[in-house]
Image (cartoon, rainbow, N blue to C red):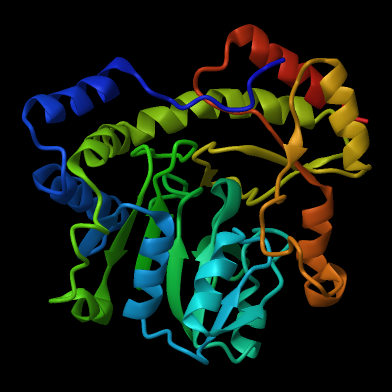
Length: 345
């Protein structure tokens, strides 16, 4: 059976971590600051902080943007389940907003109607909240101007539409998880970047050393961030092979499909026009692992009927599956997965 995921760790990644250890700089320090600066440059932000954990980063971002007890925060139900833990701890009011069927991100019209003060914007599987403007004939980012935005680019970092629309452009605060299976990995932790008036919210309020990312992790993240474009191109070749296979079926790839869209190829998720269990069973016989794409999202363990809460998102929740896509897949494995995709039931 093909492994569903392997971390993309190359010799230069390990050398960077080893050099940090040789220099006896393993706690928060210069490497972490350099990593944050590089991340800020990537998303065109002003300042930032690297955290040991993703939940700490998320909590800090919500606090910095003014979220407190009773604050209405809009989220897509397809966002990670960890959001619930953090939002409930703060005591804010979570408002589910349905997604746009073309982008997979929160529908900006529904966000405006939700009464929320803040949008926690998650961009799954490399997609971006970008639409085609028929009047100007140019793509443009969705209009979330009526709310403050925390943009979570954990799965979309590196994706772009032309030169103007890119992951991290929208948020006053931009966050990105750096876990083992991340587009960019530091072996754990997360990074936060701020711009505009939000910069003032973090001045003089730096977290303690027990919350900030150690240099060992930052050293790994720095190399991976530096080589982000090359990594995207490498995975993009695999993505292209999958897309060609999917074109032979009646099923649809999840996310943005504009001609100008350059995906980071972080994953390959397919919205099925059939029962997912049939696909999982079929792929398993060919020794190809397939899993439900949104098994760990906010719809998980929800008491209400998902179709009553957000019908478009619910449809994707129940019918979207994910296939293995990572740089260390062998050509024989890519060919095998592509063959399964082209013959999906």
